[in-house]
Length: 204
Length: 204
DNA sequence: ATACCTACCTAACGTTCGTTAGTAACCCAG
DNA sequence: CTGGGTTACTAACGAACGTTAGGTAGGTAT
Image 1 (cartoon, each protein chain N blue to C red):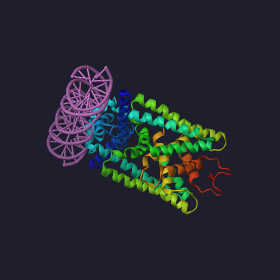
Image 2: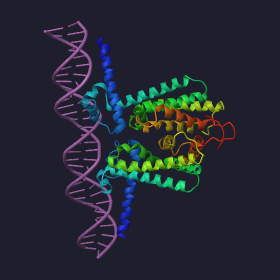
Image 3: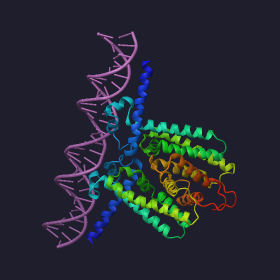
Image 4: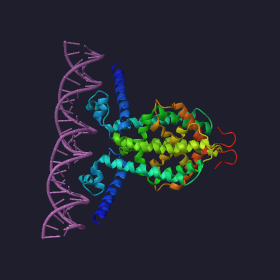
């Protein structure tokens, strides 16, 4: 079928553009990257990009939109796979760290380039980001209710955990000292240490 | 003295420009901000900015240069004021959080706009940023040697602490629920909980 | 009063930007 | 062999960019 092949090729070309855009925006930023530079990396002309995307903004939104989808589905699957607040928080943190190492560049963009989105696109992205953050607040709250966590402020702790793990995307390197799995393990330990209720008289 | 008044006025004008640039770059990013937009906010013409700064890049560098200075001197003063690894780490974390709340915008820029610096300027900034990070690694190492801290990886823990506190600059709001002091207190607690050696069998 | 300096201005330079119009090469169906 | 759709191209648009040249009003020093 021509149509099936065609749509497949088309999707593949769009995918190639998105991958190149992720790499370029990561290094130079959205406003620092031009359609001509993006096209050059793909051995194309700038005008040809407009066959696949309606605008530069549409490319940025496509990247962030998909990344937010991946984050939401990923964390959903991660917490659903285990039971209990502690195991679920471990799974969620682990997923978040691994995602920010493996999908480092798009994860970075979905924080750093929010300001480059148009108002409408920003709204759509923020709705899902809030949803994502609510997952972590929910896990902390359940843990506190169950008596296994002890945190002075759920919202603040959730922000602290998320920004700490999100930071992995800014410094992680494939050729670095630590593998994503090692980083995730250690982050999980650090975080659990700071939210777990201390059995007897707490050190603080 | 004419010269003293003159240099003072000149410095004040430059200061005004820097403050406006911090606010603008924060919202739109360096490449997303134009000299004309910056000038409009100051009720000036774009060309007039070149009387005070040689280029747009020079403005960005001036912001980051001074911010790095403030960070280095600030953390130096903070740790020198107390004794012992734990008290010093508390002081350093406390300073870092307070700085990223009070000087939120320039602190944010000194992380997000590193990529907009020219190669030479970037080098100068990174040298001092590395120096700053070394302070935290040093505090962790002393604590481990003294037997009061227990961390699996000093470098990783330092990065985790720094990115977590740095994140405050991205979400803090003057009109938010928590005052900088409260945030700092709680961050200090969370971090100390996760690096302090547990007296008997650790929870992990 | 004159000369000078400071701090701004207007006007314009050449370049690059995102984007559109129109077109040519290719591929597969009939 | 022909025709239509797909995917790229060349060329160009107007706008905005960072920056420079040159001028001018107002204060200060002599």
